[in-house]
Amino acid sequence: MVFKRKLDCVSVAFDYPNIPKAPRSCRRKVLNKSTDDDDDAKMCAMDLLASLAGKILEEGQSSSASSNAFEGNAQEIKQEDHHKPVKSEFSDQGNSVSMPTYENTSDKCVVNSFSFPDNDGILERTPMSDHKKIHGETGGNVNVNTGFEQGEAIDGMGDGGLTTNTCNLEDKTALVVQLPKPVCVDMIPNDSLARHGNHTNLVRDDDEKLYSSRKCSNKFTSYKSPAIRRIRKSKYWKQVSKDCGHYKADVGIKALYRKRKSCYGYNTWKHETIYKRRRSPDRSSVVTSDGGLCNGSVSKLPQKRDSVKLSIKSFRIPELFIEVPETATVGSLKRTVMEAVSVLLSGGIRVGVLVHGKKVRDDKRTLSQTGISSEENLSNLGFTLEPGGTSKVPLPLCSEDPVVPTTEPTSLCERSAAASPTLDSGVPHADDVINSGNVVDNNLELVPYQSEISVDEPSSDSRALVPLPALEEVKALAIVPLNQKPKRTELAQRRARRPFSVTEVEALVQAVEELGTGRWRDVKLRAFENADHRTYVDLKDKWKTLVHTASISPQQRRGEPVPQELLDRVLKAYGYWSQHQGEHQARGAPKDPDMNRGRALDSVVSV
DNA sequence: CTTAGGG
DNA sequence: CCCTAAG
Image (tube, rainbow, N blue to C red):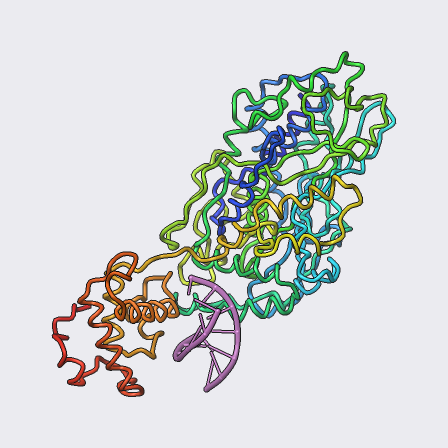
């Protein structure tokens, strides 16, 4: 019961309903993609904890108060949040990284770690450049550390109880969710525990350093028009990659950028799923999400006296990249981190149990059979978090219109209004907004670093990875993510394809006829001012293909057929402007007779 | 930031 | 659609 409450509490932490959709992306897909033969249940973060606990507990305290507990906790948390000065979030422990002086408004950071033992959350930021240092000079492979590499280090407890103080990874790139204060999983009803659960203080992990680098900061500051807005990237990102010194980071950031920019990413929060699971009526001490774990499998232990008590001190999750404009509120920052974590965890995580450093794969075995008992030296017990859980949530689709903010449908657990004024609104508040109105663009970027991992040569990357933990098992685990879904990643990074409609083509042709082929920005402004997803580069490219299309035989054309009439105009304009470079550059439709002579230009569709 | 052009 | 070089 007690432990249950605790779990609920934890779960609550992840339940952020109305979070303004940060760019979710397909990364999530990656996370969910992994398939494992293991019987390990695939579960979400909360479930994870629950599972662990349940697995180890001898007696399945079938508490039925889950729902209530859950809600109750949620409430409390909200209050807590409310009372907590925003400031403390970052200034605690003096460890918190003081924000360097940024010149720009937005910074991309790597969240190396954060923990949430009690109630405070401290987020540290790390500048890419430093990030590199931190992770060693393993080249751009640092990121490969995606997975949950391993867990271990269990601090035995003398009093018969088992305390798994840590379940973390060596990987420093991992985002650490730590529960410094042991979350006791104890069968013995204990109010203190329950209370404890409601007051989680975030404790900063001193081992993990996060920095911010101005290099990684950017200039997504004040855009004026959508057109302009959507143009800063390549250079910028390039810079970042250079500064950061590693490819992976570059990739990740780019992805972030894109996502933020136009919500091309897929909205993949799984809050809903998480929530549902949590709410599941038969959700007991053990979560059985995918036929994986079940109470039965772990309640073999003979008697109560042989029960095993343990507490999981911390879990570490893969590194996350977060981009937050300086103008963002603390609240949005919180949400960002929360979302990142939620996505990551909900994406699918499995728990591995290590006994004496060896992974126990047989879920059917009892703890005692496995050597886990109160009489054993529990320090031999370890847990690992493995990516690879399979999410059942359907892949999110890319929102067609980036301008339309997606509001979290599942706001069962209302977000604390106290956290930030902007919290309850799907739409960022003024202080959150950088751009003129594209909500999406203002959303924070979160990308599980893991998903950013190698794309082309996973094998080589994994090889060059950061030093892996000593344990063989651990190594294997660490590599899993890499080999599991490397390819997918690439796709996620690319902007979704959006074939031009005939209408768009027409508008483009029209504009080019009037402006020529060397003024894409103007074309954009004139004909695609409101098409945020069409950059002038896109238009230029489209024109390029149009010219090509018009030059080939209809049989060779693909995709939605473009009316020959338009193609004719394309060639006409192409020919015209090819001979009149520099002319009419000023503006206005070309009056050159040649242009109109060949065909009835006058019939051009107006606006 | 824009263009222009190759990938 | 991406990336880059160049202005």
